[in-house]
Image 1 (tube, rainbow, N blue to C red):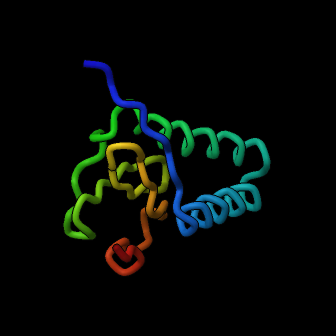
Image 2: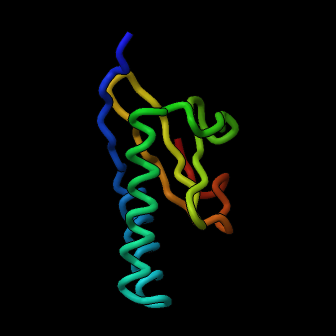
Image 3: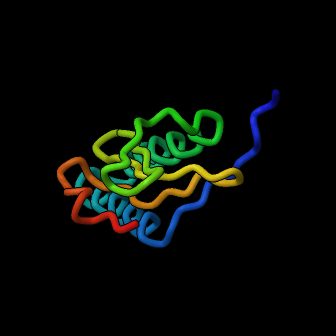
Amino acid sequence: MPVRNRRLILLPEAGRDVQAALHFTRERWGARQRSKYRSLLYDAMRGLIAYPELGPARDDLFPGCRSLPTGQHTVYYRITDAEIVVVRVLHRHQDAGELIRP
């Protein structure tokens, strides 16, 4: 049976998380590293379309939550029939339990 085509959706907070990470990366390590890190993050998120259950379940955060460590960040997402919904993209030192609201 073929894999259902899902769309990748970033919620506004997740989009702001990514932009903040990329801004920090550029300020700290330059434009070239920012470009590499952007590719790493987006390639990982796009990979979830083909392998949505790649990240382990994190029902402790909210029902249906999954997480995917990527570089220094973790992508928190949920799977629907039509979409992979990225809820947040947090640095590994950020407290997901405090920052993720279902």
